[in-house]
Image (cartoon, rainbow, N blue to C red; front, side, top):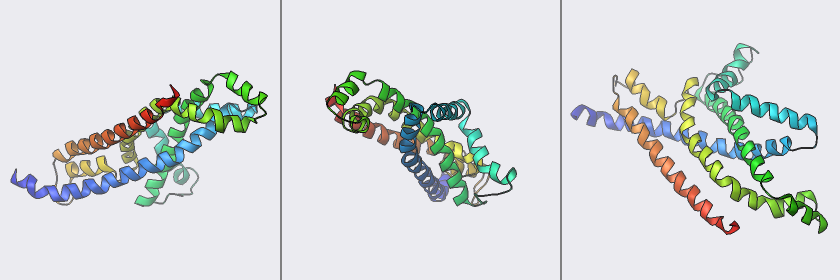
Amino acid sequence: MELIMKQMPIVFNALNVGFLHTLQLFFITLIGALPLGLLIALGTMSRFKLLSLFNRIVIWIVRGSPLMIQLLIIYYFPGLVLHNPIWGGGETGRFWAASVAFIINYACYFAEIYRGGIQSIPNGQTEAGLVLGMTHRQIFFHVKLLQMIKAIVPPISNEIITLVKDTSLSRIIALQEIIWAGQSFLKGSQGISGAVWPLFFTAIYYLVWNGIMTVALGRLEKRLSYFK
């Protein structure tokens, strides 16, 4: 016990740094994936058949393959195949490669949620808007958008909670997120080796952050309850 108490400051400093990387990846993924997902969804419903087909193929490939494989391809493919290591070998390059992979992956999942939300709104509202002289753009932003948001909040919330945990997959390209930090003390880091207990504390970080996100998303859903 005395040894663990001495190790705690070193371990928690490393876990805090790793969790900061986890949070950065989480927020950058949301900032990129939420709007990109909407664009992809609109593309799948486009009247231009080639654009719609292309978007559907991209969604099928991304949703049908493991995120871990996508991380490996995006990080290693430019250097090993194209001989153009655009990400470099540092931590910054690994972080941005992981960010791109997560944004593309989650944008495709969000796109299907957006599409379902948009298509759940009765066509009669579009017809009524057209009769009143509104354009399709005005109908979408002034009539459908808020209703769509209400419909998609629960499934989007589930994906966001999943994203919190999926960030741990970025350690496959040696990004120093919180699981990587905890596991390093098992293998040997900063004079500590064979220590399993740091890994158990990483679960607490995830549980606390998931709890915060669950409460925040629950409040958002309640604020949109006026559409019932």
